[in-house]
Image 1 (cartoon, rainbow, N blue to C red):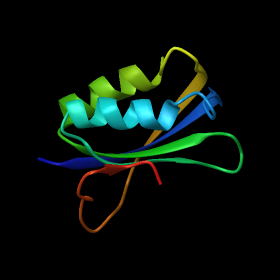
Image 2 (image 1 turned 45 degrees about the vertical axis):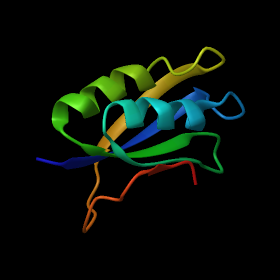
Image 3 (image 1 turned 180 degrees about the horizontal axis):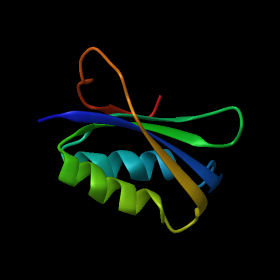
Image 4 (image 1 turned 180 degrees about the vertical axis):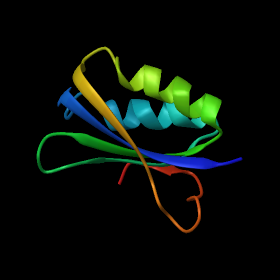
Length: 90
């Protein structure tokens, strides 16, 4: 069953290829959604897939790519009508 979650990742997560790396990770886990920069310096990740894949992505988000310094990840249920196709970096 496909579940959609929203993650808000804080720390040094902009300008370090975080969104691109998240897209690669999500695609490898068959997760659809997006990763976008927010004006407050965080990255928002919408992720839709099976629960096990979402848990793997969340573990990865806590570390991110080598240049990132993640200080926190907030997870919440996303209420969307239908899961997106593919994974974009908005």
